[in-house]
Picture 1 (cartoon, helix red, strand yellow):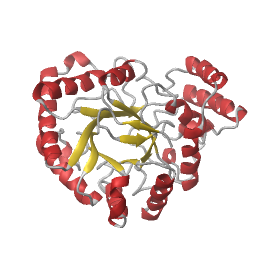
Picture 2 (cartoon, one colour):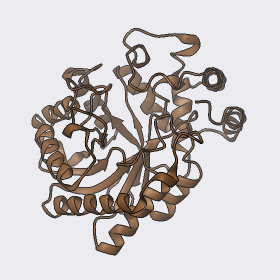
Picture 3 (cartoon, one colour):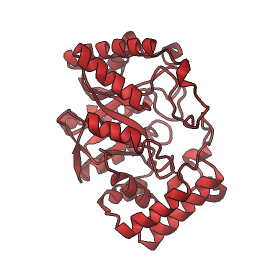
Length: 350
């Protein structure tokens, strides 16, 4: 297993981050225990979760994933220091989470306490803002015309960010969190947090996790360049495009128990003709070089300059085993050129 430094934190994290959002819905405690144990055996030291999980988010699944991780930690207290544990505070829009309200100082302080209780730990290594208070150009909102940035009150957003930073600072000083990160953010969001932290002597953003894959690479080059020069770790989520790049959903297939077979709150916006065609082409390249489609997609993300650790999740242990092997793969120039040809044909298929 290879490791990279998490921004300026001084913490080394594995190039693989174990995602957990299926635990509590598609996976139970036993499944999670097996995945955690296997990942640690392979050298993974980074686990990501969120108060909102399991997915899809509902009042019944809220907090279940953190509780499952907490159950494991309660039985493995001596191994807590072996794990870099990351979780997230949910943003606005979920009626069952703080009445759907914005992330505020009060919300941060309360949410940190609740996550600590569910996780059964004294501290969180990386505490992340799951999405900003303003509408984020993520979750299929990245097309021109979906958002009107000039209508956003930047002064108000900045004031909210400062309030959040002050609450995070309180948590850091109390030893409840070590570092903080962002998710589903933009270059402006990153830079505003950096500016405010420097101006007011508050915690500096350590990382950002955004969707990034062969099918959704809009963060390249501008946001990733920003991360490199600001020393902000870049953590791709959904590197398999919610499983699509495995090829299991090709031509309308819906395997029993798979994520796309379940109800999706944002709809199956990744299921397009262009995406289907791109996945077929990538799968052909993978097979020609002795890889699975998933391994090709993950190895490609891992080799992108600026990527710190890639968040992977699995519902079956065999999937996790297959995916972790991808991080030992070095893609040849020939493979990268073939992938590049497909990418240029389908640069943004959903």
